[in-house]
Length: 284
Image (cartoon, rainbow, N blue to C red; front, side, top):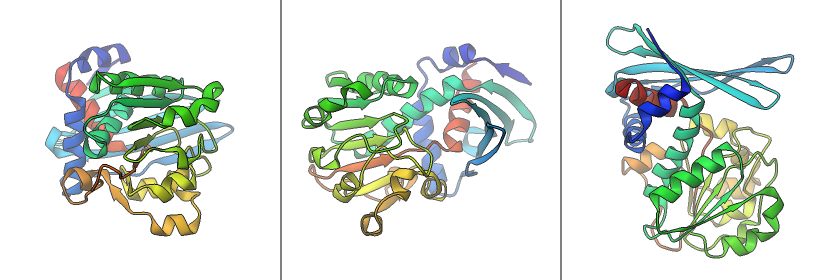
């Protein structure tokens, strides 16, 4: 059985079609050709253990990501097995995979639901995921203006949002970052910072104005996403929620006009980790 460090993983994924692997995995999930487990969290004495996994036969891999959370710090490992004979294939240090798959799945959702002529992108946050998203989206939309908004710059949010077609929120804020009324018509929002029921980056106004919310997988997202769980009942009851796989497979239409606001609420699911780990192993 092999082991790949983060350095090995970065080298293997250089130039790889991570978006393509994720898109295929989510379509497989929508069509019943793949399966995944919701996240399980266990903690004691301030130490948290989390696991989530998936079976992706089209890539020949099944596995799970296991990680610890201590004092706000995360460390990730993925274990992969073969779907052919069940034998263990590899372990992978997965900090790089977690960083890259999160930005890549936001891009997959954006390509499916954002306006095609993106000229302005705003990223809220200054941490690892904010930087990863800024890099990924600037590469995907090389002609677009990119603006990063940190916590100290939130007073500039209204002006920054006025002309943005893509907005990414990648913070650990427990409360909404801006007034959803400030979103411009046609905006695509990727909210990736919160995966806990008690935190949210977007307010009721943002969801009240959106045409739909796309999530990775409702069985997990609707249990974890504070952005959705903390909505006022009147807003939540009117909200249309689609799984990403159904949008990619053509089973659900996220956008019907240029004026639609679409929100992608990401919490991170196991099929993303396993699919990208499968790519890394195949190229290493």
